[in-house]
Length: 505
Figure 1 (cartoon, rainbow, N blue to C red):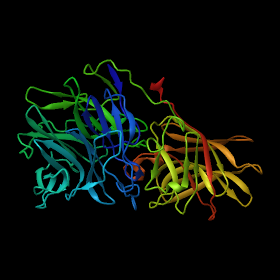
Figure 2: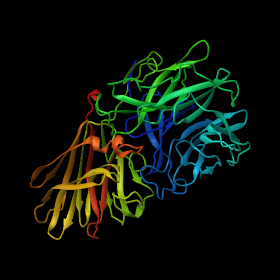
Figure 3: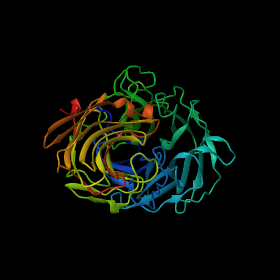
Figure 4: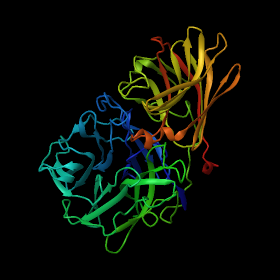
């Protein structure tokens, strides 16, 4: 059969996977967004359904001060003795911790913190022991993949942290995971930085502490030498064995806006490649060590791959597709299946700290259309394509002493520019705000009682990760904020985000 990568599109980086009771479960990083750690379920590894988030309470996920570079970094999900564990790092508040649940569709525990530093933590279970690993420094100050044994009930270290592997020679050794396959231990990680030089490397040994022998042909997966190819940044992977005994790797990568244009806007996404072992126990990945958009494989049964077609208020949920920036004050929101109402507070979308009246979904494709009817009483409210506090485009309405005006604003670094400022006819306070997005351009417009209004285009590359320097992707947000210290309720209805990618037919 043939399937298309990515298998989960949009800003869902650092995937980790486990298998339990015939299904597969996957988690991703979430950074400053709340709730945290998106949780996916699949029957076949190709089609994934988001079933919620792992971290749904402020007590689990304090995000004060978490700007676009803070919050939750790479998680790992594991299943042991009927219980799911998710371990991650809150780089802004608290460090390394894990939570657990016996019901994957229910609530997760309060955090259990582990006193070992570094990021990208992982768990490995064997013979009643729980091994905790991360990248960083061990108790002797040696840098690399560090590991200790912990009491899984309390998180207390039972052994000193010890560096067990220093990698294959690349920079930024990260995302370690340990597996036991056919009697041997495999330690897989990423190197090269989560950019264009990203790669997956591994080693194998006879014990959980090694010594580990590097795979002779590391890296086992990278697209760093595929010039003129859309998919880049392949790395940070996790292995899983399917029901037929075949192995797979889910990993992050990103899609450039063009095969020759080194900018990406939809963030690091989830990709799937087959894994093949040789007679000596070494494995290879993908298409000769690379990840391709189209994958032909005989390791999966004939599966019909489904693609998302359209998001509306009616077929999405707050806390599933819809998220907030940092810890929200839910008193600012009324959110149902047909309309969102937002009341602005003292925070704005220009700030790195604080949680403004803002709710968003990920931009999952480069080619899409978005529209939403916005009505205001006071203040400002609109539709925003948001990357960081310094990189975002919005079309919005705001009330002045002369009435309501429609405008576009472009924020690129230190430049904040407003144009297409148009006064609505007296008494009008609403408009349908629209965007048709392509690989290269966001084209903005509005529909009013007086007719359609073209609000101009803006280049997508100025919202790219390469210019923003962060780790997320563009999100499509609905926001409200005060204007001249005035801010009333803003109402959003008739939201529609439509996928225009050609392979969806």
